[in-house]
Image: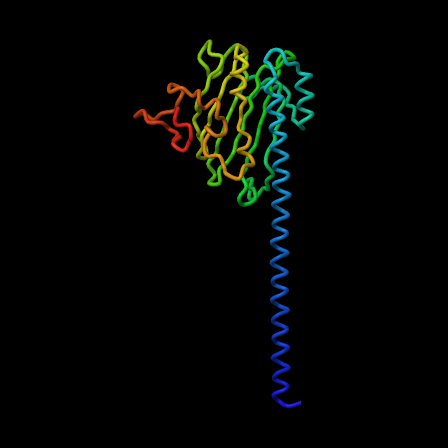
Length: 258
């Protein structure tokens, strides 16, 4: 075989080797993208199911009544949603009644002590705390938190109280307010419902926009997460600085600033 023939053979082998390497690289990239796609599909499916559970739980909690719902009913509800029971105790010299706590959240992984989701997804959770005294529901707090992609937290809270209000002025059965944020940046919108609250007021108080949990477009403010109640946020319940300017900026809210 001449030198020219040997060169041709070598070049042919190099070309085939390069083609094989490119095919392997393409196959590897395709496998990686396929695996990532499967991970996102599985993640979103689980997240969607958790959102459905949150929707069901919210509907059941909305029907509870302070002073009328029995502990046995609360216990069954807690067991259905894998809740946790805490016995009555004294904490900081204050009596804490027995309670049942239920927690539903988006899937997450812990990294360096911090909960993280997949890129493009958001961290959220629904927390229900049901206090029991003398065998009946004495207080219910339901809290929804959703974090925007920049880490800004949206917190929405509804409280079912007894005859004695916690945040509301005396005699006000339905009260909407903003709360101070002392930790990471965020907004908190709260609703307090007394036993005298009407059916419509209870509907607005529990009307969480749970599409914020899984929608492709993230919700930006508490006017999105608790829209019905936000429309009832009166000027005297708004947080303001000393100069009277509002603490929270709702210019992105489509319905305008209350």
